[in-house]
Length: 391
Image (tube, rainbow, N blue to C red):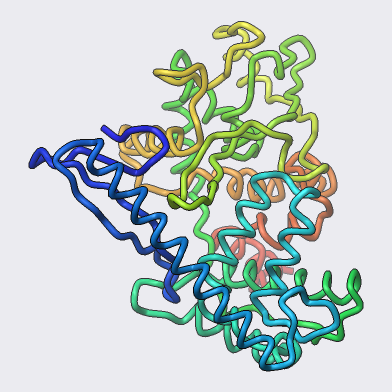
């Protein structure tokens, strides 16, 4: 097993292998260098020696970069001199770090490390305009060598660049292009589970509500809460007398970057946005099951096996097992939220109220991202308009 602190493992052949992260390549993949030893101590010494060598190499590269900048009439401190795209995003990250949640910083840092620094980090910021940004994002989205990214993630990368450039313009008076990169292609259409599929799933969940995962998934089906919100939910957040669910926390596994590579940890923090802090009425049928299987106030609704709680990827795994038990094809847990929103609209739900239940800042997000009409619904409506032979 791995020792804490360094990425060192014992192999099946008896040797110890130490892995050190050396860089993130232009294709977005993390590269490692391995060393081997006959004992953990020997492998550890080699790992520390390799880290020292890599640090020295990086220092040498930094000195060379500084020399080139000085020769080009730049100063690395960025005071009044030209900046590269990499320097712009680095300064933005450093100055804004204290204003973000740790998970938000980790997300932005990963985007910079994996997609910006190695690809366009050396580009001149003053000449990197909207057309350059769009070309860059489209190139990332269209990759076919295993490094292709989704349209939405390409937009996230564009958002990071736009915010970084805007920050340097507003806060430091830099004359930089205003980036207005459009969407990098269109993503796949969302396929929401059918009513028949959901009825089959919810029937199974109701019958097995004694299992905390089944009860939690059923609650998500009927309230539209996010998977991280479900994982962080405690029995004390559920008012069984008034039938109200209080969403106050979100559980998320975030990435931490260091010299030894990328590690992860689970954090419970405030929800995604201020709008996500909300109260949701619980349907009567689900409320009855919650009362029947009520737990202690500090107990998590979805329990873990080794810990008191179950994180998102564990719930995703369990959800896949539930679908298999029901004889239903696999789909992502998040589709429950899409189904909830679409079904509410089909049943005449007030969109403003629905938006507040989902934790959205405005109804445009609700209608644009989470409301989908089925072919049956379209057929029913078009037949209602063109009822041939009827007066």
